[in-house]
Image (cartoon, rainbow, N blue to C red; front, side, top):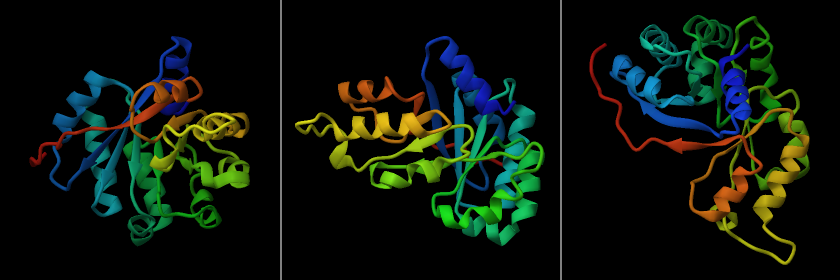
Length: 218
């Protein structure tokens, strides 16, 4: 079982929400320091690396050796980083490093098949999908076959907006939850009561860690 599935299932069984911790990592980030923080906090960790894809996979590999727990790790990077490395070499590096998911913000649905064919390999990470209210009728297509979880983003203008029929954001989340084959993760800030309402539908939310991972040789 993919680590993401295990954590989501365990938290759901306890009636708890899952936190996806989003952390930027640099080329000299300390894997040991980050591993200690991850073990203490639990949840799922999304690592955003502005570095060559191979180096980011190498960092995850070092991180895995230092983690005490079996923490899920998601890589967040651009398709350019992956394409520069090569689609199959990147997939193989993810498998070797122990990455559980990949988030590619600039990869349209229509361009995904060229990478998906390699992600069919045993042990390959999930290609995590993203949707928003503007996805509309495309949501079933965007999330077809989605694994792990689906990121749900929204324009700030909709966060606490109310209409005669209710909240547009809640309407979107109810509709998405009905058709998505994977749990939803909120990808917008925790800002009060309306967020609590959204979390009644979603499995959890992403949190941007307001820290700098120590830049040390490791």
